[in-house]
Length: 123
Image (cartoon, rainbow, N blue to C red; front, side, top):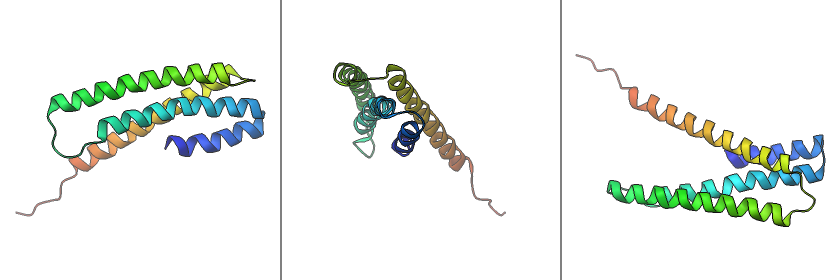
């Protein structure tokens, strides 16, 4: 969902503003998407029944990696990208966080709705 939003939004920014702003927007979006993908990979890599301690360990490891990847991503963007539009970097990052939050909320709501729907039983 994040990538499906990032690509068209980059094109819109490029058409509406300029190439530098669009590249900065894209880099900010990538700084959000890559760490989130790492977190999801760490958390959901093993399937089946797992002990709660293993799930917690995976979540903690994924969150630490997500934080470090985000910090390294921002450091790389601001160290290597010239010219840069800092506001666009943070805007791209922020929009991807909003998309992530909305996507997570929608997924939880649909899952909850499926669990509450039960077939009618006849007596």
